[in-house]
Image 1 (cartoon, rainbow, N blue to C red):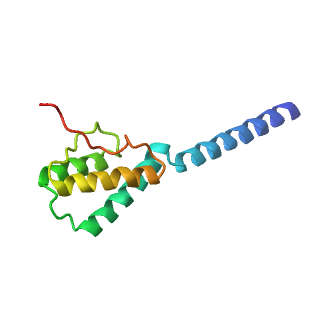
Image 2: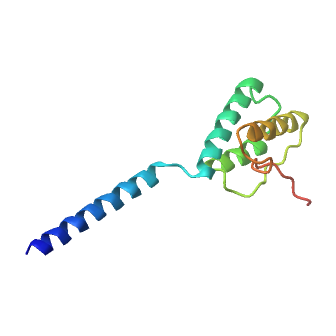
Image 3: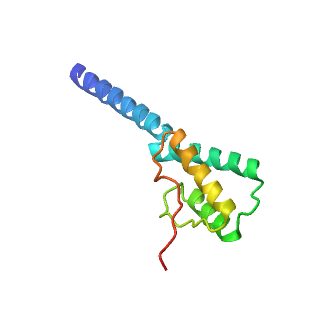
Length: 112
């Protein structure tokens, strides 16, 4: 009888520890989530600075889709105007300053 109480107590402690670890892991964002949060902040600041002047609808919509995906969709935001290129360059620098690679931002143009 004493042995089964010790076993049940040990099992309860292990389960409680596992649940606590799972809860902690669930609260800690992944590196992609951290990068995306930093990138979103930089994007918001870039839009505030530029007032989105010269940024086309397609550019903004594709970029919004990138952000909505958690920054995981394939790069398909093609800067076409001088203003779009300036913002894209600004975002590449901001992404690198935030600790992400220069390939993190979604800027790419298809060869069609």
